[in-house]
Amino acid sequence: MDLSILPSVNAALNLTSATLLVAGRICIGRKRIAAHRACMLGALASSTLFLASYLVYHFNAGMTKFSGQGPVRALYFAILVSHTILAVAVVPLVAVTLVRALRERFDRHRAIARWTFPIWLYVSVTGVVVYWMLYHVYPSASRDA
Image (cartoon, rainbow, N blue to C red; front, top):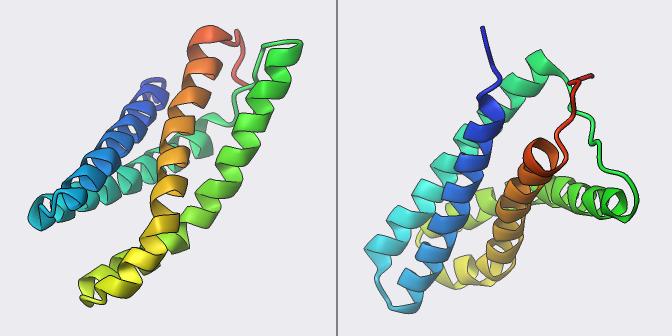
């Protein structure tokens, strides 16, 4: 089975998540609660699909080496490390934020969403940046583990 399309699919899912997060933030700012809910649930679905696709790809294809050299290498790894750490941190933040909204504890939902939103958005956007740098700006001839 050819999994080579999955990195592009993953980037598209991250971009979808980022777009829905921003749209959801705009909607809640305009008091469009149903639209906010739809956007945020869409962002959650997109992020969940991303995670499943990412795990399938990397379980089967291994890791891809970054081929850039010099200062861009340090930039890439700074983005990758911050992205990875925050990606782990955002999972429980999203879960708690979602549970508070579903339980209609909107005061507590807003309090944690102030942290969850920018971290989740950063993770989604930097996921696209990592993909772009790894597969388009500095593509590697070999895909090694």
